[in-house]
Amino acid sequence: MAADRTLVTAASKHTAPYMIGENFAFMSHAHHLAKWIVTGRLGEVRFVEAHQLTWIDAANPYFQTTWRQAPAHNGGFVADGGVHMANLLRRCMGDPVVVKSVTAQFNTLLPPVDTALAVMQSESGALGTWTSCFTARGEAPMLLVYGSKANAEWHWNHAEMTTPSGITTRAEAKEHALPTQFCHFADVVVKNLPLAMTPDEALGDLVLIDRILRGR
Image 1 (cartoon, rainbow, N blue to C red):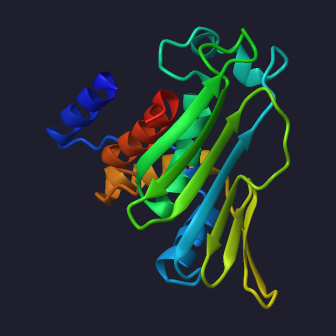
Image 2: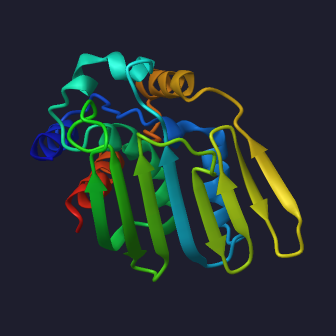
Image 3: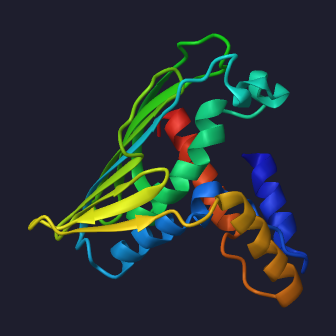
């Protein structure tokens, strides 16, 4: 964390743009979910469930990278994949003021942990749960948001909002996140546009993951 804060501090002292590319932050249906919340279409957010279930073994291409096999960063795959989900969760319920968690390592090839479970509470009073496991398979929505007026689901390729009367609004993922990130950064450099994802926001996502890993 100290090295990450140093990078953010250094970036703030220079005029050259510095952006951390987090995939979910640039997905169009993630923006739709955030808009539903900001505009009040879900009402007051009461409860958020985050699910990140992925089976990682030697056959998975992501396993093959050296820095993932012997991570120097805290959290291994839980941190590597988790920062993207953390960005989405924070956009739904803000920064938790309370985090309680437990972690485990079921696969010795995925150090230092491959699983994390957490409960949290935001300043608004909204509650949340976090389930992150890279040694399990699951098909649940990656994020569930329960509001006083409607509920929402966020999947890899779409988001849905459903009212108590059963009316569903669906938002599809329109483009891949990686080209979107690069195109946006090019516009920031060439057209002097503001960053859609600031270093401080990325640090906030990492701080949440660090809190989940530390259990506080």
